[in-house]
Each structure stands twice: as structure tokens, then as C-alpha cells.
Image (tube, rainbow, N blue to C red; front, side, top):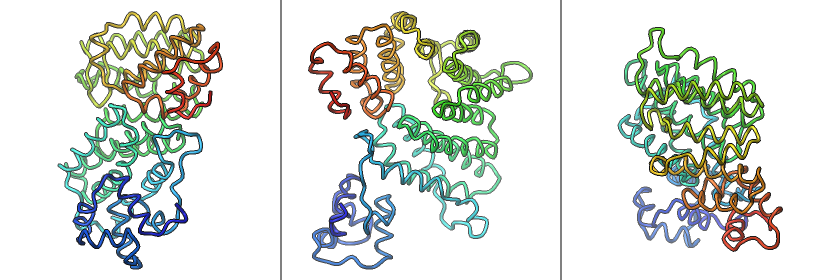
Length: 409
């Protein structure tokens, strides 16, 4: 890429964004012929004003057009370009709220458009399309930050802060999946800070689980446990709280994430206590729902029981819990949740020495949401373990999936 002329770089990124020359030309206010000549090198592209406009439309840093190589991630997670993670990092480093203090944006994004974009981002995440999400997040972060900076402290200001808080949360969630733990922590911490301006305790509560997850990913299990428990106690039903389905969902997720942190810390007694508390919340909720994008309910609780057993090293209990889940309820969950569970159960089967079943779980997870299996470092570890312990050559489907994941046989 470093050797390519600038026109070829424009063509590369236009292709990555799945834009035709005509669509790209329309957004630039140029003709299709002009774009074609630029990309073929017939016409020079030497005005910085035009370069910056092109970079904005392509949602990339202008340096990528003038000489920076979009290298792949070194750990062979082929679904994500490292440059896209870098673009998310650059968006997180913006401080539009401070800039607005001096010079408010004259044309902030419309909140209705922002709501649609944020909902789409969450659905993209929950369907396990991490590549699409990382490509969309830099612009979404910039737009949400601009909206939050532009609106005041009235209802519109609180809504803008609420939307920005959600964008930070989904950013944290996908970065953690990809192993970018410190960046995930930064985004989650931003979400927690913004939620206070949104004046929504439940948004702050679910943001707490993102911070806890990031801490857990960085090996800070005890800190993650204490944080989740502290906020769960403040949101516990009763004590003047309105026990709404949304409240039960956020409270239940705080307990579930606390249980996962306790499991990582080897505290089995606390795991059981927290899972029992979450069970009570799920029973009161009465079904599986997606309030505040939690997917909380009785079925997701069983998935967490299995995951906690895996973290405690009890693969047999995890597999037993897996077999107790009713298939219609499981199929009603979104793909990311189901594929994540398959990864957990693959780890459980590996713990009890059943590498064939472990491989089958990875294959099932890949069919549900391939990014959950192909893009996560923990999935690569499981696949490496399966290949190492397979007697003789692995089955063709496993070998093919390993190749797609970039895991050596």
C-alpha cells in the first residue's frame, strides 16, 4: 500500500466502504469521470481541502491517503483491520465538548438520525458483525460527540448525552471482544461519565457492567466484582426504586457480570449467591428481553451459569447446564449471545477432554456469528488447544475453520 499512488489509495478505501464511483462522486459533488481519473492517476489530487473532504467521506484519517499503510492485525484476526481500531482510538481522543465551549457546532447531527444510527450499531453488535461495526464506529463516535457538544442541558441535551453514552458502550463491548482491553476500558469509562449527564441511573448501571468487563479482561477480577456489586446494591429492587422491567434487566446484568468476575477470581460461593440473586430478578421479569440492550432473562441467566462454571474450571457442570437449556428459548436469543455460549461450551468440552465436541461447538458458533469465533483471541486459544490435542489430522471442517481463523495446524 505504501507504494501505491494516492488515487489507488482512494480506490482501495472506496471499495472498503462499498461505494460505487457514482455514489462517491455524488457525495463529493464531483462527476464520476473526475473520480475515475483520480483513481487511475490521470488527474492529480494535490489540494489538501479536497483530500480532507475525501477522507471525511471515506471515514478515515487523511494520513491514510498520503502514505500510511493499513496493515492487518499482527495476531491474524482477519476480519478486522488494525487501522479501523486506530480510527476508533482517534475518535475517542477527540474532545468535542471542550471545543464546543469555545465554538459550538452550527449544524449538529439530528437526534432522530442519531437514534437510528445508535440502534443500528447495537443490532450490528448483537448479530455479531464486528467488522461492519468497527468500520461504522469512528463516524458514529464523531457524530455522537458533536451532538452531545452542541445541545444544552435541556431534554435534547440529556438525550444527546444518552446516545453518546450508548455509543461509548457498544464501542467498549466490541473492542473487548477484539482484545483491545485498555481501549475498551477508556470507552466504558467515558460511557459511565456521560451517563451522569444523561440523568439516567439505569444507563449508568449498564455502563458499570462495561467498565467491569474491561477490568476483568485486563485481569482485574476483584476490582470488577466490587464495582458491579457496589452499583447493584444501589439499584436493588425496593428502597424507593420503581421495579420496572428495565430496572430488573439492568440490576440482573450487574449481578451476572459480578458472578463472572467472582468466577474468574475463584470465589465459587459468591458466584452461587450472585447467580441466585439474578435468578430472582429473571423470575420477576418473566421472560427474555433486551431492555437497555442487555438480553437479560431466564435463558441468558443459564448461559451465564455455564460460563461461570467454565471460568471455575468445571467443564462438566458447564456442559450439563448447556444440555438443560430449552432449544426454542435458546434460538430466541440474538446470534452474538448464542455464538458466545457455543464458545464457552467449547471451552467446557475441552476441559473434560472431549475435543471433538469442543470443535463441533466452535463450528456451530461460527455458523451463528462467524466474527464471534474468528475474531476473538479466546476462540483462537481454544482452536489451538483443539488442534494440539487432536489425534491424527483434525476433521476437514475444523481444519478449514482453523485456516479461516489464521490458527496454524
